[in-house]
Length: 192
Ligand code: SF4
Image (cartoon, rainbow, N blue to C red; front, side, top):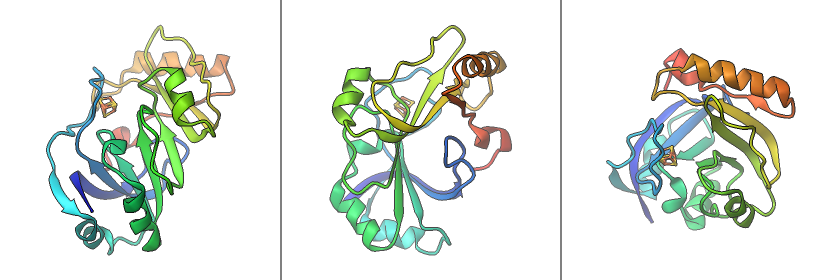
């Protein structure tokens, strides 16, 4: 079992309901979308076996993995998830929502880049977290799937905060209080 891995790093989760939680990020290479605001170089990478990945992360004092990308569902399998589960890890995934996630994932965070009917097909039982990126002028989302946490996340210009978008999202959330604001805290704190 192997994966093309862009990078592995240990840091704090920077956004959403798990913000502030120490987590081992495993960024997998490749994505099938071309979002204009994408802030990630995800094409480069190195093929690693799951054993090599485990060797890489086993000394971190943390039992949470976050599978991210790129788009991690393009490579991750339920067998690989099981491998890390057997080692005692909890596993979260950050996905655009265009594919089902492998069995065994403990926490699904979807930042949708696909139509709502696609999310309904892929996540009939709902997810832990929905996190929609919004810029000035965009309407409040109308999700068709259930989530434990609903977030609006202001669109940044790469790593640079766009204060017009932040102010707009604050107003959006104030008018729709079932939503919460999530800002990409790691970009302000310059942690990674
Ligand atoms: S889905 Fe995510 S990783 Fe892929 S291009 Fe869009 S923002 Fe970037």
